[in-house]
Image 1: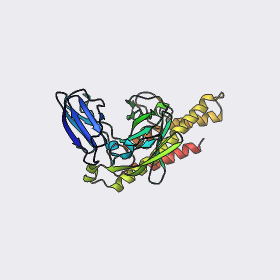
Image 2: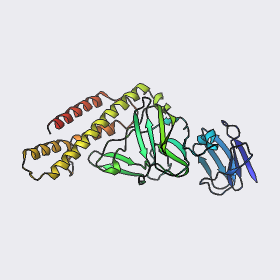
Image 3: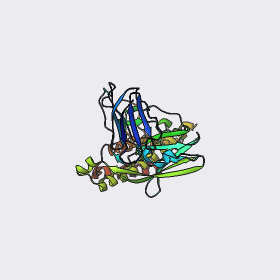
Image 4: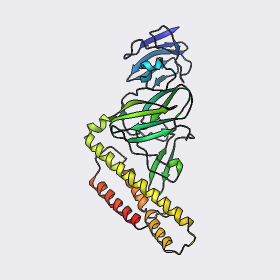
Length: 341
């Protein structure tokens, strides 16, 4: 027997039914029903409420459950999927930084992300590009890469923490979901597992998601809204724009410094005449770029740039004068090292 039926407040005819045996959904005002169990335990559903685009359920003896983001179900394309790829319109997403829990893991907050649902008529390699309002590439993801479990790594030279998150796309036949973490592509790193990760957060504004599959591309608008709590405490959109611009400048500098360090180290390792003038020039440049391994060693240029980069990403705020001055100092130092080799 059915215990409760609720209609979606935004799409007429989209019905959710809670029964003694779980959840069901109807896209056609009750003419037909299909199971909507997802990962819900088989248990009586006693009440249903749609709240801010999420589906909240109470159950008999199994607690409360929330199905995040039913925006896709509200779109006509969900019921008319055919032989072409479909990228569904994501809901406007608040841009906020990750809330950290203690070691107990409670509460276990989801990482901030734009939820992108897409349909593929057939399995195959795909690409997802995020573009800014001027059409410039913000980030790009491709399927076919080995998935990586989320893990935390700490660079002991800079005390910088990188959160390595699986950014591969699923490319299965049927419905798929990807969570864009609202970040730009990160800096180059010699470790492929860390390459282009940990980029700065994209500023509030309008973006475009472009999905390419089987030679066909589809696009949808993506809107990032500023965290209202940040604005309430006095940080303005102009402050965030200035912070984002400086972060991208520092990112570009970090990218170039890491690449130069790797190129020079590779060249030095291949030299047979270690006493040559070229070997001395490489050694001097690498001494300026690379932090030597050991206890309490002085961070050198690459790690100094990396430290500034990480410091700018701690909170939403206008960049300080010291940060701007430090960027110019590091930029000049890198130019001098580069000119010296």
